[in-house]
Amino acid sequence: MKKNIFIAMAAVVMMIFTGCSKDIELAGTKWKANYNKTLTYQGMDASVSMAFNLNFTDATKYSLTTSGTMSVMGMSQNMDSETTTGTYTFDGEKGVFDGEQTFTYDKKAETITVEQKIDDEELAAMFGTDKLTLTFSQQ
Image (cartoon, rainbow, N blue to C red; front, side, top):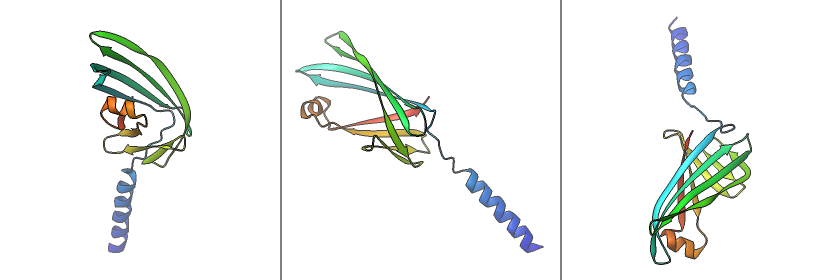
């Protein structure tokens, strides 16, 4: 009898821990990240505000739409909205866009983080860094 109770309790504990894993499926989900920064452009302070909308269209394809505004000396200029498409792989924690750009999923925070290297030296100097980190939240 004790053996049966022990086996039943072990099964319940296993189901509890197995049920808590909460793996995420990205297919069909939409994510958003915002980037706001004041930077120096040709000796003038400029304010940049950008929105990134990431859509995982299926199990292997995504689209990313970028839009934004740049303000210099009280004048604002909208940046043209641009959409790119590509493929991705994802193992539940880490992924890769187009075979080269890595991203990670944080289960606890429920966010996707992408760290983009800025290769252009002038652009990196303008942003004050050679990396742009974007944190996406599910919409």
